[in-house]
Image 1 (cartoon, rainbow, N blue to C red):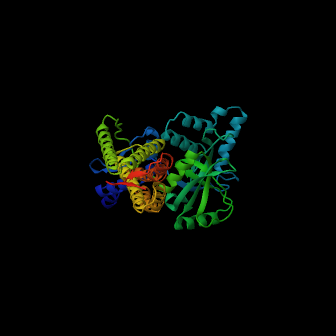
Image 2: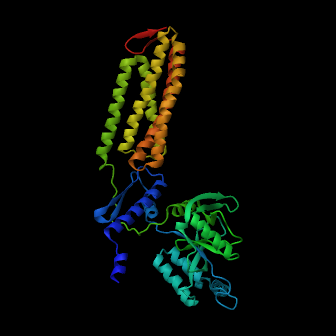
Image 3: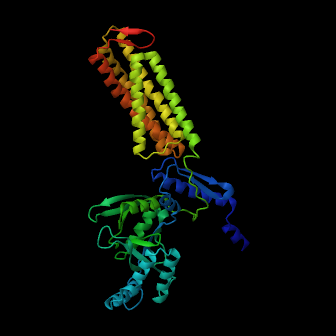
Length: 458
């Protein structure tokens, strides 16, 4: 007995293992929400997980996503004649519901009473108690079957998702989330709603093929948490490990269900120990440090460009300022929250943007030294520098994209500002700067350009 107890005892190493699993799942769920630099850390001394979410306003919705322990199960509906006399337990329940409806006592039907529990938000304990009461009322053998509610929308597409009838399923679980590999939501034109397509693992595909082969004509219910969302009839054996869930989902519901299938359920239930909202006053020091670093870098770069390239340096500075404005606008449209790694990405963007202009001006200098006119030198300078700048920036962009895909938290925040900064830098350096330089030499007649410490003219 002591050996059995020791096996089930939650030792410190096992606690850490379960927390690691939960941390990985929470991290994946937050990543799918397109949040800015979410950070998930294990607090070993408190057996807890700390989650930091910069710039989040819908904290209750995110908290619900984090705490969700629901998973997906597949259960066969009860067979024909399960209750004897050619009846099923579900049909007996429905007969009683129909009798009360004929007597115009709709409020007394079990399904309406169950709907009221849902609408009043009395909690899962009350829902389970009600379903257990149904099993006792209709003498359903609990060692073989369980009562579930089938959830669906009404006749209208935008009607509320509610339990619409009761179904009786086998107690044995035919398939669960461990048998599934991946899931994706997609829009179904025929039903004007969303479905969830999923693929199974090799072992799951074998089980699925066996179940569908041996139970043709029976319904295979798909249970999400404690909700039956679909109960398709098995028409034939399904091989290949690819199937879909039809449940008239909204886009949000389909995405949530796909996430649960793909990531799995949390291995342990979570409760909130503490929730703190850190306002900008507590983070003002970090903001000031970041802004100061960007401004100092910006001013030093502008001073250097004017000192070395004079008029052309002013053009580069104007392009640099436009680059910062465009980048800020893009990040604002994305709802991106700037943190210190994000500021670092912007500072690096400033340097890379000026680097492109330096390459262009050095190419123009070479053309002017070869005796070409300012108009030709500017045109050929930009043309000769174009692919060099593209090649150098694309290699950096590839690295940034990999950091976004594989990294998380601060690494991802840095990579996002870096990638968008590269794109805006290419635009301002190759197109905006060229537009201004062409205007100077072609329209305003500027023929003397100081590129370096010597004035060059055509």
